[in-house]
Image (cartoon, rainbow, N blue to C red; front, side, top):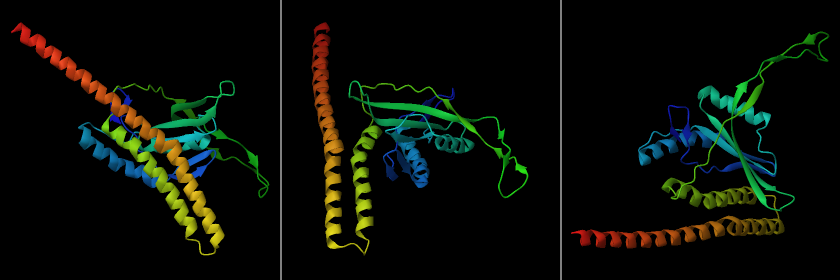
Length: 245
C-alpha cells in the first residue's frame, strides 16, 4: 500500500498467503507470513519507486457473515498497538442468495477502538467473596473502502493472480506428504489418500487454474486488439501530420 498524509491508504497489491487452518467456517494463516510481508513491501517500493509498507491484514469468512468476530476485533487491536493506521479486511464468500441462486462476495474494512472497561462482580466457587476483574472490551468501527476500477492490470497484481494456483497446490502437497509420512497406514489407506490428493488437484484445476487461464487468454486477446487499434490511430495521425506539412 502507498501511504498518504491525509490518512488515506492506497492499496496497490496484496500478498497471497498460505492457509494454516482450513475449515468450513474458518481460515487461518501463520504469523510468520505477516512478518514476511514487510520484506515484500520493501521489494515493491524498489520496483514501483513509491513508499510502500504493510498497512493491514485480510482473511476470509467462508459461509458466514462478513462482520468481524470478537477474536478479529481483538487481533486488530493488537496490530493497532504497533501502527495506529493498521486496518483489517474481511471477505465473506460462498454465500448464495436463496431467491436468485447466485453467489455473492461481501467485504468490509474495520479498525478497533477500546470501549469502556466493564467491571463485573462474579462470585467464584473457590472464594466466598465476589471477584471484580477489569476486562478490556474492544468494538469495531467501520472504515470506508472504495474499489477503484482500472483498465490495466499492474505487474504486481498479475503476479499475485498467477501465484494463487501454485500456493493452493503447495497446500495440498504439504497435507498429502504430512499424512503419507505416517508409518502406521496400510496400503489401502495410502492408495485412498493418493486418490483424494489427485481429486483435490483436479478440482483446483477445474475451479481455479482453468478459469484463470481462460481469463488471461481473453485479456491477452483484448490487449492485442487494443495494440492494433492504437497502431491504426498512430498511422492515421501520421498521415494527417504529413498532409499539414
